[in-house]
Amino acid sequence: MIRVLLVEDDAAVRGVIEILLATEPDLELVGSVDNAEEAITVAGALTPDLVLLDNQLMGRLTGLEAAPMLKAVAPGVLILLCTALDLADAASAARPDIDGYLRKDRLLDLVDHARALLAQPGSA
Amino acid sequence: MTGEGAPYDTQKIGALFELTSDAVVILEDGQVVAWNQAAEQLFAVTALEAVSPGARPLGEDHDALLALPTTEPPVRYVLSSAAVVQARRLVVAGRDVLVLRDLSPELRRAEGQQLLAALSRELLSQPPRLGAVLQRLCAQAKTLTGAAYSALVVLREGSTTEVSEFFYDAPRELFPARMPRTVGLLAVPISTRSPARLDDIRGHAAGVGLPGVHPPLGPLLAVPLVAGDDVLGEIAVSGPPGSRVFDEVDEALMVDLAAHTAVALRWAQAAETERERVLVRQEVVDTARHDIRTPVGAGKGYAKLLSTKLDRLSPAQLEMALHGLTDSFARIEAFSERLLLDERSATAGVEPQWELVELVPLLESLQRDAEVSTGHREVVALDWQPDAPSHAAADPEMLRQVLDNLVGNALKHAGSATVTVRGEGELVRFDIRDSGPGIPEAEHERLFDRWTRGDRARRGQIQGMGLGLSIVKRLVVAHGGGVGVSSRPGEGATFWVTFPVEVPA
Image (tube, helix red, strand yellow):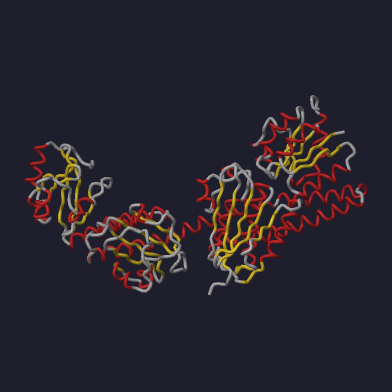
């Protein structure tokens, strides 16, 4: 079972992910929050395998700013940045604490991305 | 007190005195220490004698000497109370030397024409930048007339009262910190299309006085900038009280300056407008491209869920997905309408269609929409003060756009907002408060200008705020209202706007 924490401030996008994960037997939504501060607070206790992280969020921190902190409180967690950026922009924003990118116009790719990431040797 | 020029030895000062037919005055620390005969003729002998024995500073009757700039190029015209002269300021053997040459009106006119011809060639040799043209005109006006100050106003296209550019070449304290919105003092030459002196302006119905804090001005001469049938603006010269009164040569040269440069000014204005239009369109497109992706992505997500997983969805999930799909389309539709409005407000003139707008339904619908877009309850709190008017006089779409924009920003930065409504004289005031990261004070002034976004936004994290606030300002100003912000880093921000309560007559 892949445990997913969703950090997303848009209600519609949250809705898609919530329904999607409810229909996938090997993925479980363990938490859903709309700001990075709360994500950092709950990530340690929820022990997710994967954080689906939006960049533009409510609150003071952006997703990219929060990523290293999430890795600090939940060691070994994989971070998938959900982005409305172009792939070219995403590539230029490539960072060691981001394990993958999910395009906002292809939300259902989350399932394949998550399975591929978690199947990699050395992952949680 | 240093000037330009080759260093001279003391013997050469003597030679200068003997050989030149020009007036020479030696200054030390702003005090006259010596002069030649020609200087005596040029200035009243009594005045020079009066300052000689104790080597006291020049009195006000020699304001022209004192008004000489120390940072300007060495050759320029200066004015005395008696004559128009050309001066070269030199440092000779460590002494400040003025070499003065009396100019006849004919000579001034001829030299002025040469300067103007050169200026025209320069301005028309390539597409001029508006800022550079304004600067050159102001500098040239001072050179031609020897005035201490110059100022220039360019009108908004098609208007005879609204200012689009304001430029001055004068001490800062003489002018308001903010650009005037309408021509006040300088309205006369624009409405009469002819040169005006301070007396014309004082005696004219349209001649609004200078702001109360304005230091007193001496003589003033203002001429309209006319291109074809259009008055583009005007240019004025002035100086401190007691300066030489502008004569007919000054007036002729100023009229020539306006005639020579109005075409270049219009060209620069058109080029600037076009550059700006292109930039604004690009900004609108970039912002839209980013902002549309979330609702489109969500809509696609719901559609894909319905098409690939229909058999696995529970009735509740099915209903949620259908609702989400409908909602996404509604957001995309609202977005495209707002985009059109943004584009229009950003690039075209704003003409409110006045109505009396009931505030309670307006703000409650704004509150509901914020709940829908964030998926959270009570993200926008309404605080009705006892003196809050029941309605505002505004274009309903524009008022909504202004409040949407400010509330949207608060939600982006802080996730929630409080809107306080109160009366303020003839106005209704909306304060939109958030508890976000706040905005450094240095940013406040520029926040409402186009292209300016806070640091966070420049890092690409908050999109479209610069454009949004510049649109807010345009819309509010078109209603005769005001806009502002108070904020400190770490303490959230309060944006406020005012709208009239009654439709202006």
